[in-house]
Amino acid sequence: MKYKFVAVDIQNYFFFKKKNDVYIQKSLINFLNKELFPYFIKNKIKVDEIISDYRQPRPGDAGNLCHPGTWGYESAIPSKLRKSLWIKCMNSPIWIRDNIGDKNKKPGLPYPDSEKFGRWIKKNIGEPSKVIPVIFGLTIDCCVLSTIQEFRWRGYKPIVIIEAVGHADGSEKDKKVVLEKTAVSWWSNVMNWNKFKKLIK
Image (tube, rainbow, N blue to C red; front, side, top):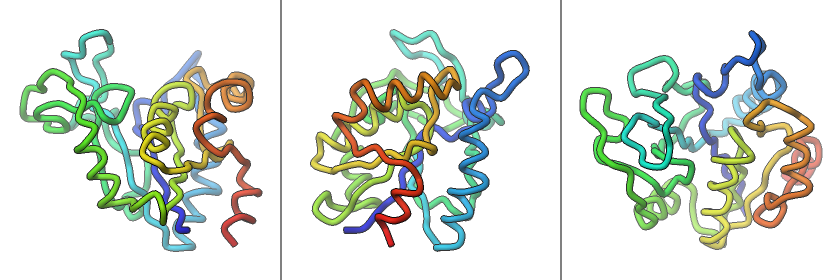
């Protein structure tokens, strides 16, 4: 089995979001920059990336952020690591829209397209019989969880590395609760970085 890495919402708006003048994802930022990204570079690993275009209109969600062409929309992953890109407009990656990711055009209403997302997965990540997706990013209580579920429903057995995900409020305590006591463990294999590195040797 091959391991394929899938990043979710590692965008400047979320990655560097502040709370009381402190980066709330500091521990995640440190892990990615000091451990995961150097590991990718050393081992020539590319990342398939899912990012968000959260402009209005988005019925049911008042958020209006991550506008294409702005700093907040841009990826925080080193460009040399990126392999493919999927853009979503709601928490679940199957939700897309007309003119998604186009800064020069007005975005359409969100709509789900499970088949199109499935084709992107098959093309860029591979078949569930041959690939184990390792999903990381923001946030484990929302968009990462939705992504894990979509992969699981397609027959994949995803892995979540504890240090490589963040909680919406930046709390390590809340992240631990979500990883250990809620639905994440139903949908994925949860492990720490050291255990994962031993697994793939």
